[in-house]
Length: 94
Image 1 (cartoon, rainbow, N blue to C red):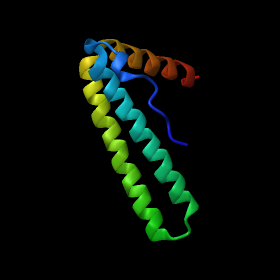
Image 2 (image 1 turned 90 degrees about the horizontal axis):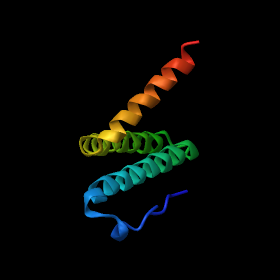
Image 3 (image 1 turned 120 degrees about the horizontal axis):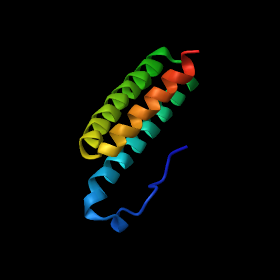
């Protein structure tokens, strides 16, 4: 259910460390979102469901914060995200 640290951060060059820790933080937040949304689906208690979904929503904000920081550091990531957005537009316009 939960991801493991995908790389050994001690083996990453200093010039890439910040980008990698931001990516790791994004992975952790996505795992948390998945977990909380799955738990919300499992419960029949509407109050518990509301709390889990609210916390999941907060985690989505955290993903946005970490991604914003990553995009400040990684120009290639910005370019590739834009390419991906354009590809989806082209594929879904038809």
